[in-house]
Image (spheres, rainbow, N blue to C red):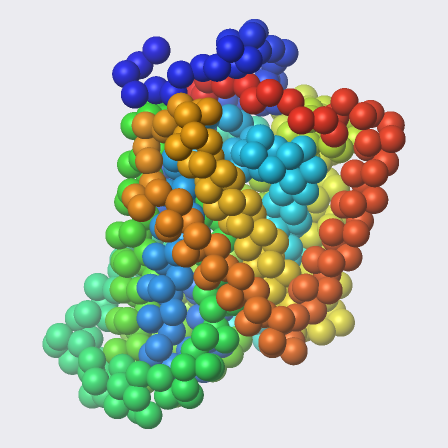
Length: 484
């Protein structure tokens, strides 16, 4: 065993020759190049490219501070997850830690809720993609475009994981390169004053129009729901790093580079955009990046940016379909979902799980038909609520793990979170505060009703599981798994 690696307990030694892991049978087709780029670009999606438009209209330049504040909390969450992963690297990640430290029911609830988060996020991405297409073809109904993209991406996800990984690599490359290009061009406008936007571009735009908090601190805080949605999927960094050949090196590097990614792609990009174009010119439902390039007047610039953000939306939806299929198979292998979800197709993909997930994502198409003007807000609020639950489980598991380490019951991780459990307590309080803000917002609180119904449904499912297969619902000794 390598120096610094966690030691196995006697129960873990006994289980080392346990039955094959849930991932057995998958094609190991994701190379390090693909995993690293997916990790960098995974959290850059519709929340930033489209959702920022509505939030700018609500909060003005103070949205920059909200993204920075939430970014600090996200870093606390990821360091907590990193410490857990290096203590006991397992394929089930946060769902497995919930099972270990809180009990089997919480692992079951977390895994299913994470599946829900990705299904609903897929709805949001389909909605956003339909809005982007309306930029070129305003006469096409949103629901038609959403349906077409749903069917096309469904077909893509039935192809081998190698093709999926390569597509995601280039999707992420486009997003990252485009954001860096936008920042450079924006800085050029600020520095040299070229284009029509150069006459009004200035750093003073951040405070000149009714101040940095133009609508008050209260309105700024109400944007935190949308801001947290923009950070959804950042926890996938831990999941993808968990499949690498050397997690002891790859995982800390991926997590420790998170601050500069947040600073550059979120805080940096928004700061430049709001300096180039005053915040009062942005409107909900329109990507601020598209609006900014239209203002700059670069030939076909707005259309190019619109294509980039369309690619970002499709990329995230594509990843969502991939993740939901794998999550359902993981649940089935744990006895917490029908066994049919554990089957792989001839191309070694969880085709049945993907199909069921896509059918649920189709609800987003219906929403685009019934309430196209509110579809994006509804689905993002539900996705955010599901994401908050997942993050809370990571943090609570981390607090309980640190207590066990302090008591000498468990070995220390080789990648301890700075501040220990204190930062996790701070992050827990922040997430509960965001939940209270969601409850206060009349439009957003519908997600809490959805989550309450979801909890009841899962509770009924757990009762059925306990009746049919009691051993599935009993606490089991953790198993130390080798990743890669």
